[in-house]
Length: 195
Image 1 (cartoon, helix red, strand yellow):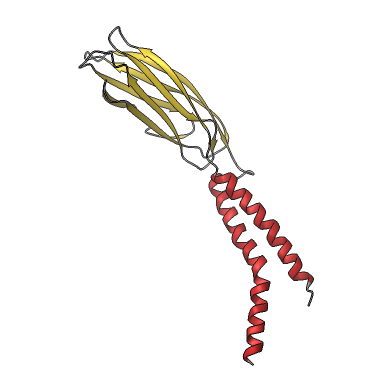
Image 2: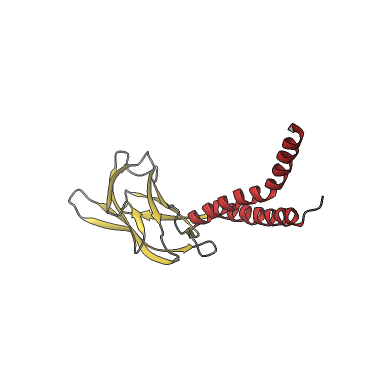
């Protein structure tokens, strides 16, 4: 027997299912990173390259990483150790670590510095990535002062985390709308056969 309510429930379920899947796909699709290489030289004895990797855009509510990889040239002095001080200044963003980080690097092992960033609102965020070399005397020499500009975006006006929740709820609702009439008919048939 034809029931228009069942037909509209199925159509609504299919439309909601497609929308929920699109929302989930967009919200979990990885964000592209771009990497730049910056050569540096502190003195005649110490040189190398910096590889800075940061996302093209950030997602509101999701953690993002900025990665700085430091590699000393192999022809640097054999036993040369280098103390580096780094800091990422981004205003109005949650940055971890927020303070200066001090590390000692040796020429044979590349060093990777990571900062985790979580935007809470959409917008354009500017700041600076600082990297200093510290001499034994305590004097600092600037290696890098790189301006950073990041764009934080929402998905349909909500954070990506909330978009994933909405997409998941929409997916469950769509499945319920699509399959509930079928299950209801099967249960009615089963109850009728038991009588």
